[in-house]
Image 1 (cartoon, rainbow, N blue to C red):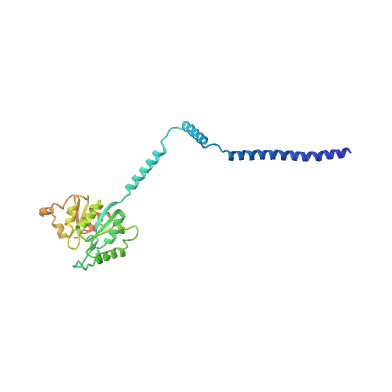
Image 2: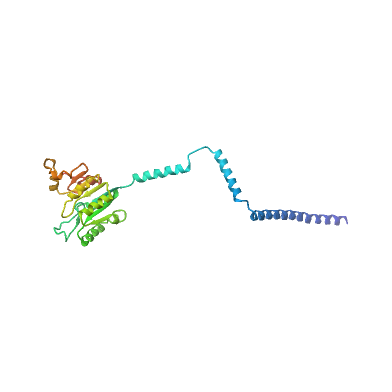
Length: 265
């Protein structure tokens, strides 16, 4: 009988302990559920959160040492970027294509037969790497325009990264060309005239406004600007900002592009 009582007592203790543990766990779970429900039903006000954040920010500012503001540093870095960008910006150059890069052996203006001067296509390619090039072409007809455009296309000068088609400008008069150049305001202009004129009037009118003018003319015309026999009518053309040459590759621009002049013996 004593043995049976002991067994019954031991078997009755185990279920009570388990039940007690389960009871505590259930009570804790109920309390947690009640807290979560209360927080969701009655969340703290946004004003309280803002005041807490503000007080935390003030405490952090009072603890941190004074220093340059983020706005100032951003402005400084932006200004530095603009300086770097402007230093890499290409200078603007306008180029009258005829008699500088192209020539027309035909004596009839209405039936042109344009071709590139020797190494002129290579020079124009290199020129686009150094300058922001605007090409100006004096034409007499749509057929001539198509012929020149085809020459540029076949030479690969209209490929991406070279001549910008938007900067290939066409004109039918010298006044139109002058107006374009004055509007573009280039740092350098290269003039060669066209079939019926060597560009003298254009150079004369642009000289006060363009800081560097390169005038490509014939040897005979160039010799007329010799100081010993300079005509009074030509004095308004020559100046410190005007360079005369017979070929584009023999100019200071040609030297920038890597071409050297070989003196004939």
